[in-house]
Image 1 (tube, rainbow, N blue to C red):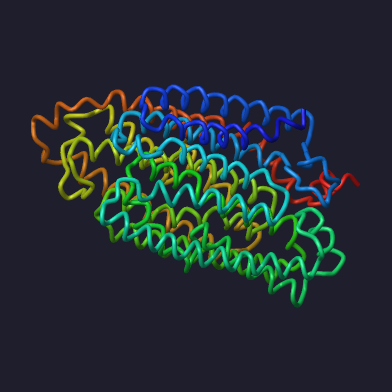
Image 2: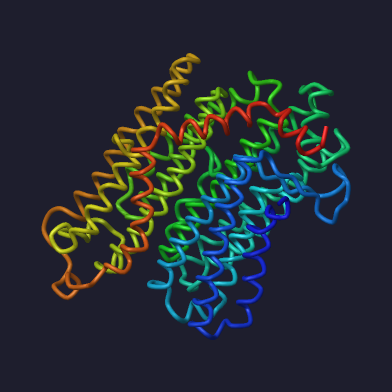
Length: 493
């Protein structure tokens, strides 16, 4: 059953390669994509159930002995993230069928879509630091192509910034890898964790921790390294933006949580206190950017920065409930924010604009769209009984218990501003005088809403079923907070 681990990586990689040969046939590409994405979803569910029932799965590629062989490791945290990537991938794919221009489809949209999924899943499942870098680069290479798909001037300008900052952070990643290999003599994450514990985390090891935190914070869009994200995510079509916001920033946050629980967890007053400060600043500056915006996708993009702060807040607090809340919030944010970006695509299709000042009256002409958006927006703002409320509540309670009053106060203030900016979108776009023409008012959106509805249903279900989900995520958090489980499972000790 260990070979099951490789399916979420090898399936999208193989399908991406196959689709290259059918780039000019829209129907064949779509047919293969549907079959493949469904298979990836089934494999991800199967893997998550298997790991939950039978424990962590480890496979060494090429049958080389660990720690010399490259390991793939499926623990409960990794399988949650792999399943999340499959769910987001399915919804965004079906939305793309209805919105991506045929010219873009013919220029290798679907191959790079699957290459990105392969890179993301590889990041979640790898147990080797250098291969974490490799899968980062696979993900980024695919995203470089997707972010410029269409070649508008705005896309090209913003993609250059996106490319430059990621190349810069990748160079630092290699520097961090070189330093940690020099210090420990290994790149196996579990083996590094064991050796850092033996060496004690101080001096040069803390320097390496800061270098890796800088790298992952850049890719995860933490303060002050978030400036590349808002414009980069507003340029591409909605399906691509939704895929990016649902998965790409989570890759960076996942890496932070993995590295700072397995490897660098011996000097919490240094590393995790610093992470907590970054969390508060990220929340605050991200939401202030959102409040200042009047572009539909721009508001959502800045909120993507702000919400990242909540995720690393749980790691900074470093308690089981806080870490479970961070993972819950990651899942909730991916689902809700992907849905909101897809909704922005629906609004643009109707009105021809993403400026909310040019919109109005959508509630009258498209009520189903309006109310689905409203539910999702309220979940993002943290209104009970939706998922966003329980995500924030599970971070605030341990924050108070651990006396982190400042970051808790910031998180509550940011929650209020999030609600304000969501209501700004709703009041400008959905209420008020109808600003779109009668022809635009008759545009049918049912097919698009069907592709987004599963995400809306999920945020409702996550809220109503918060208790059993949190029991599961507490098991995940306890497993993460005991690095010996990961280390012993991988090294076979």
